[in-house]
Every structure is written in C-alpha cells, then in structure tokens.
Length: 327
Image 1: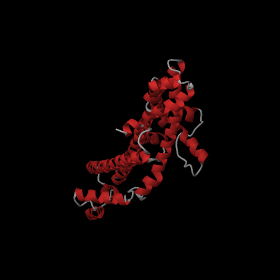
Image 2: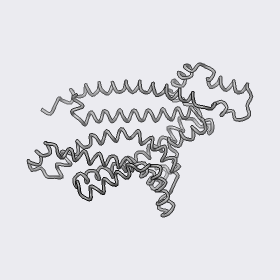
Image 3: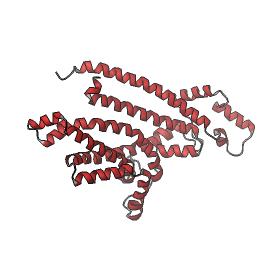
Image 4: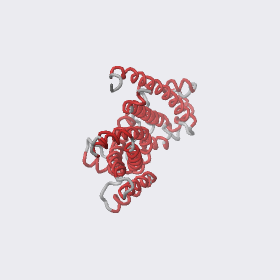
C-alpha cells in the first residue's frame, strides 16, 4: 500500500544519480575539448595582445615558452584542464586581475542575482495566471491572459529591454536605465536597478510557463481521479490545490529547469542592454579583447552550471513523478 518503502526507493534513486554524474563527467570532457579547440582555431594571437604593438622576436618567443604555447596541442590541453581543475585560470591580459576573481567573485554573482529575480518574477506572475486562465477557460480572462502570454513569449527580449528603457527610464524616469548595485551595498537601490532587467529577462519565461500551466491544469482537471474527488464532495478549490496542482507542477518544473540554461543565454543580451557586469557582459568583452583563457573559463563555468541545473531537474522530476521513478 502506497508503493515501496522509502529505503527501497533510495537505492534506485542513488544509482540513477550516480549514472547521471558519470554522464555529466563525460559531457564535461567533450565540452572542454570543444571549447579548447574552438579557442585554438579562433583568429588572433594572445601573445601579440599581451606584448602590444612594440615587441621583438626574443620577447615573443620567451612569452610563448612561459605560457606553454610552444608545446603540442595535446599537452597544452592537458595543462589547461589540470590548471582549471585546480582553480588556476590565469590572469586577464587587460586588467591583470585573476580570472577566477573576475568570473566567480565579480561576474557570476551578478548573473545569478539577475537570473533569480527573473525566475521569481516569471513564476509569481505565470503560475497564478495559468491557473486562473484554466479555471476561467474560454472567458475573457482566459483570452486576455493567454494573449499576453503569447505576446511576451514572442517578443524579442533585447527589444523589450530597449522599449522598457525608453518608457520607464527615459520618458517617465521611474527606474534607472543601466548600472548595478550589489544587494550588500544598498538593498533598496539594488532592487530598483534590477526591476527592468528582471522584467526583460523574465517576461519570455513567464509567457511560456503560464501557457504550460494553463494547458496542464486543463488536462489534469479532466482526469478521472479529479472527477471522482468531485463526486465525493471535495470542494473546487481543494480539488485544484490538493489534487491537481501537484501533477501540474511536474511539466512546469521540467520546463523551468530546461529553460534555466536558456536564461543564462538570455542574460548575455540583457546584461549588455542594461550594462550589468555579469557573465554575459564579461564574455562579450573577453571575446572583443581576444582574452581566450578568460573566454574558456567563462564558457566552462556556464556549461557546468547548465549541466548541474539539468541534473538537479532530472532528479527532482524523477522524485515528483512516480511513473518515471518506478520505470
């Protein structure tokens, strides 16, 4: 009764998690090879960038030896991976700062801060809107809600950002149009600076999640167990929140997890539009300055975050959905 005991369920769950970790390691190896090869094939010479316009062949050869660029490509790859694992990601040619500091201490918290607020905005707006549209199906509430969802789901985020800057920043002067203040410096100022970027990045996901919530809830409300619950006298609100919403959350959690990687991608454009010093803006500047080791480190960090988020979503999905867990 009620399926196998918790101890019996933990075994397959642990085995599944270990298998996914092994797949993750293989995937990270493939990504590291791809990123390293891509940077090797990119135009430009980092030694020339470091030395500037005035250099002689002796200093050029000396710096190549110091950087290990005179060795074979395979040895260079192994050295890079070993140093990356150890946290030795080198220094920026332009600023002279450690790459680990630029990526992990300076840029990554800004991107995570933006992504968290964007996701919270999307969930707070989208799930109630989707539930309301499903409960008021084929009424003006449903039509208006889903119309707005489709509108934001099809509107390019970078263009939405420019429109928001023009209306709420330049014309009305309600919000700052660019810049970043950390929450530890000034929480109120930080939130005000984050409203327009979070809306810009979260609007697309809010539209997507609202549509999925609405369609999933409509499907679940037609299931036989919901009809049985209603026949037993369970009130409408209890049917929705106690019986239907848990099953509705399964596809929502899956989509949110898969789209978190896309949110990191979208952060590149949003950070550029609002001049936020996050990962996206950092990698853009690094590419323009041909700081390839900075690009490599940034791309690897984004890839690791994307893979770990998907791993977490898969495990959570398996936990929420008994049919997948017992398959």
